[in-house]
Image (cartoon, helix red, strand yellow):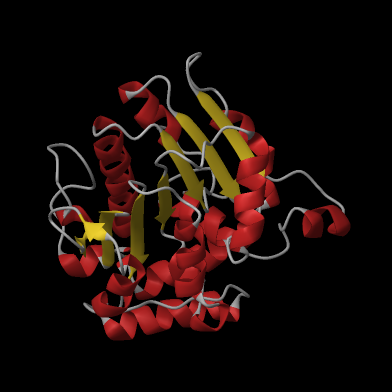
Length: 277
């Protein structure tokens, strides 16, 4: 992918939009072949690719898992979705997938990257029958997230909600209490609500993933990959749907979904869907 020409900006404007440092959402956009990224993001992403060339495959596997998971939930009657850590819009977006199944579905996107806000219009083009909203909130502050979502009026917290935390929690190290964050978010949701989660792991290539974590940390992004047992803890008290917590491309695979034939090592991402009793 060639360098994209960038208009001149004042340093203060670059800092305000976070363009003076790499951002995980824009690096992910680069892995997916998107164009909503900047030189600083591309440099950091290429550093990751050098130590783990399959990172682009992992990103595509994660995106394909998200599509399958939310479609699965919509097909089983869930009509409310909260997507935390939305990232750069990439078609099809979550609301497009679920509203294709349930045109009346309500979706609230949550992110705190100012660049995502710039492109948020692409997240608000849902069906006439449905609702889509975007709010700014910090995922590490669950009460802030819940208040922002509630403020939209788009979600009825007395009815089941699907909470999606896709490729997010590996950017929440233990000192930020990730298990407490997930627990607080789920506590607010009605019985019958669901959690869909994906999370990078070093289980299949520890050295490469240690280098990836170091690459992110050196550029100002906290990161922490986790073992399967550690990821499974996020589902404590929930009922996992078949096939349980598995590497993302193994979760209810569909023909033509995902990056094609891949290995667990290339994907290195656990994923699962569970229901709150």
